[in-house]
Length: 187
Image 1 (cartoon, rainbow, N blue to C red):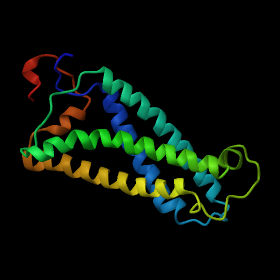
Image 2 (cartoon, rainbow, N blue to C red; image 1 turned 90 degrees about the vertical axis):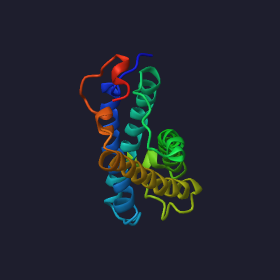
Image 3 (cartoon, rainbow, N blue to C red; image 1 turned 60 degrees about the vertical axis):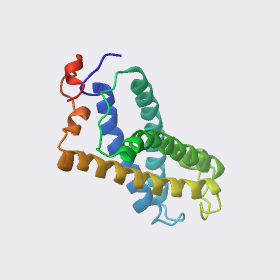
Image 4 (cartoon, rainbow, N blue to C red; image 1 turned 135 degrees about the horizontal axis):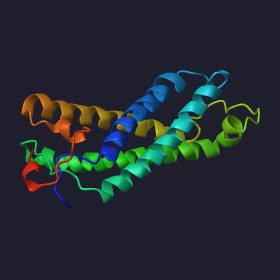
């Protein structure tokens, strides 16, 4: 693959779109769904939105993974610390794993709780009194906390690169022209 200075524009678009969708899904889960009783009639609409958002996130993550594997990435950036440099790719690929696990546990909880019929088909059946009896729901909550931590770590790393290292890292995830020669790989 040819050396480039920035990620592919489709990958940039998916990155920022997924960032918004994932933060929104976490916010809806933590502050909307978790705060509502399953007997609250409004919960059905919020759950519908949350589940549809999760399905959209899964679809976009699959597209993002394919684009990521099929396009040239910019050269790796160093933090100046060997351990942090080894941790960065693990964290980035960890996002894929945690998000896919989030969708998987959400989907499994939905199946176990009868959500396809209740939430999407409008069967009229009530939601279960609590989702806590489903181990997949418990895992979904722990994964959500882990994902929130990964997002915070990712944000702190980006800010470290921008304000401390001043290495123009944000430019790699921008819509500017991708240079295709080796002189820009170190940019």
